[in-house]
Length: 305
Image (cartoon, rainbow, N blue to C red; front, side, top):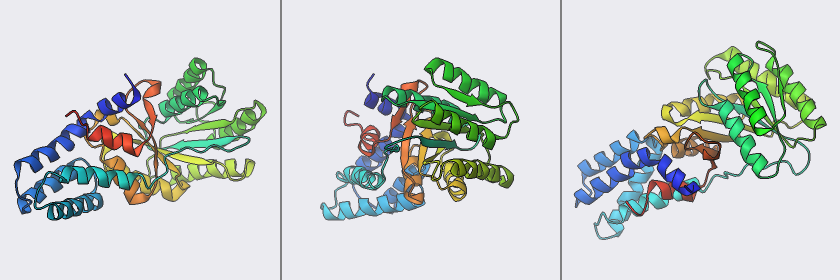
C-alpha cells in the first residue's frame, strides 16, 4: 500500500463523519437555509474543526452558494479549497542544521506516543542518510527507558540512557556530549509525559532546555509536541500550555487512524500558527508521514467516493 493510500485509509473515520456528511447535507438540501447551515455547523464541530475554522468555512460556503446561482453543488469544492489554502500557509518541513548536530526535543502529555515517535523519526532519518542519536530523558518510566533501548537495538541507533529516577537534564547533557563525539547529526530527546497544568513538571522541562542551550547555544533546534488525535480539541489546550513553556516549532499528530476528529489538525494549526510536521496513521514505522496539505485534504475528499 502506497503512502497516500495509507493516509486515505488512516483518515477514513474522519472522512466518513465529516466529508460524507457534508455531501449528504448539501445534496439533500436544494436551498442553503438556516436549518442546512445549522446541520453543516454541527458536522464541522463534531469533526473538531473548531469554532473559528467552522465559521470561516460556513462563510465560504455561503459566498460560493450566492455566486453560483443558488446552487449547492460547488459548496463541497469550496470547503476543500478553503482547507488547502489554510493549511498551505504553514511550513511542514523539518529543517536540519547545515553542519553539526541538530537537536530535536519531543514533548507532550502521557500516552501520546512520544517514544514511538522518536523511533519512527530515527527510522526515517536513517533512510534519508542521516545519523540519529537517542537521549532517553523519560526517567520517570522505567518502561520508557527500556522501550527506547529496544528501539536503539533494532534500528542500530546509539543511545544515552540514565537510570530510573535520574535527572533528565543530566541525561540530556550527557547525550549531547556523546552525540557530538560519535559524529551524529540529529539528537532525538525523548522526554517524560507530563500534564500541561502541572507547574513543577513544566519547570523541570524548562530546566532540560536550559541545560541543552548552555551546552549548545540555540538548541534544541526543534521542539515537537506529540499529540494524540483521539483527544480532539483537548489537544488545543495542551498545545497552548506547552507553547508557553518551550516555544514549540511543530506538531506531531498520532493515532489519526483511530479517530473521527481529524479536523483538529486544521484547527490547531489555525488557532496557534504552529505547523504540523508529521502525522501518524498506523502502527508501523513508515506510518509516520511528513505532513502535506494537499495530500491531507485529498485524503479527506476522495474522488472515488
